[in-house]
Image (cartoon, rainbow, N blue to C red; front, top):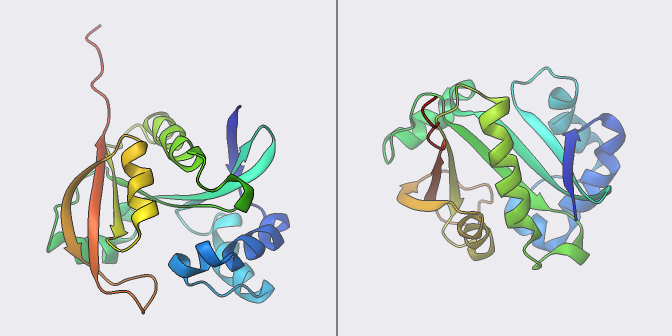
Length: 183
């Protein structure tokens, strides 16, 4: 089974809206799902007006999920919030993610998706030092997926939650760029 991805386009917005409406996604993303809201929130990235990347991930050519990838430095307000709890290293990248296809949830594909995007990050972002991801402590499935993807828990932070029903407690997960062999 092969995992691939590409940047989202406006043609993907109806699919993203359906995924965001899935109860297991809606619980954590807390995102409006109307066509207007999806266009408003994902359009700037699709048009490359935002520094982040929204990546539509495929398994054997079939849509599987979404990974949002960005440099922490491109969104300094998040880095400032995190800085009170964990130092964000220069060059750090963050990911947000979802497995959108409900038939594929709970099969280990989310961890594989994250692992492969992280491996590509070292090439796509040559200056990246690490991938650093805060995740709600209440979102067991999400932080377990990060652990299965090889990330390690390095701290806790008190951050604004994506969903206002959650408290501010987050675990912080990190993986560092692999050491380059001497040549």
